[in-house]
Amino acid sequence: MTAAQLLLQDFDLEMEGTRKTLERVPETMPDYKPHEKSMAMGRLAMHVALLPLFGTYILTDPDMDMAQPRHPHPELVFKSRADLLAQFDRCAGEARAALEKISDEDLATKWKFSFGPRVISNEARSLTYRHMFFNHLIHHRAQLGVYLRLNGIAVPGLYGPSADEPFKPS
Figure 1 (tube, rainbow, N blue to C red):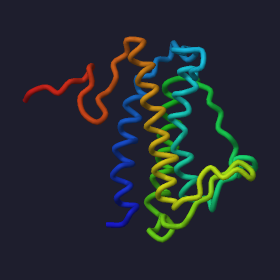
Figure 2 (figure 1 turned 90 degrees about the horizontal axis):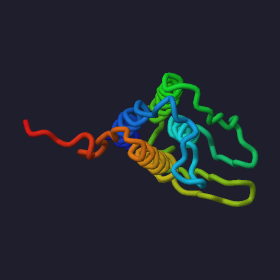
Figure 3 (figure 1 turned 180 degrees about the horizontal axis):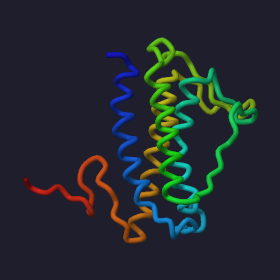
Figure 4 (figure 1 turned 180 degrees about the vertical axis):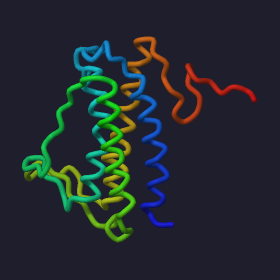
C-alpha cells in the first residue's frame, strides 16, 4: 500500500465527518460569534469547506509563498448551506484526485510554506499535508462543533458517540 493510499483512508473519513458537520450549519446565523475574537459562523464554515483547496496546493504546487500567492485567496462569504456544501464537495473532490495521483517519492519531498522571507514550514510534503491541512481542518471543524453546541444544534458523532448521537445497543 502506498503512502497516498494510506492517506486516502484518513481523507475519506475526515471528509465524511466534515460534510456531516457542514450539513448542520444553519442558514439563519452566518454572523453568530460566541466571542468578540471569534470568527463568524458563516465565515468559519466557509473556511472549513474550502480548506481542502490547501490540501490540493500542498500536493500539486512546488511550494507556497503567501506573500506572492499563485492562487487567488478564496472568499469566505457564506451564501447558503447548499452553496457551502457544493463548494466543499468540489474542493474535497479536487483534493482527493490530487492525493490519488501523488507518488511516495513526491510525498517525501520537502514543501516550503512561507510568507515572504518568513518560513512557516519546510518539511516533507506528507507531514505538511497532515499538519497544515488535516490537523488544520480538524481544528476548525471542532470549533464549528462548539458553535453548533452553543446554539442547541446537534453535534455529529465523528470519532464515536456525541451527546446528540450516542451509541445505541443493537
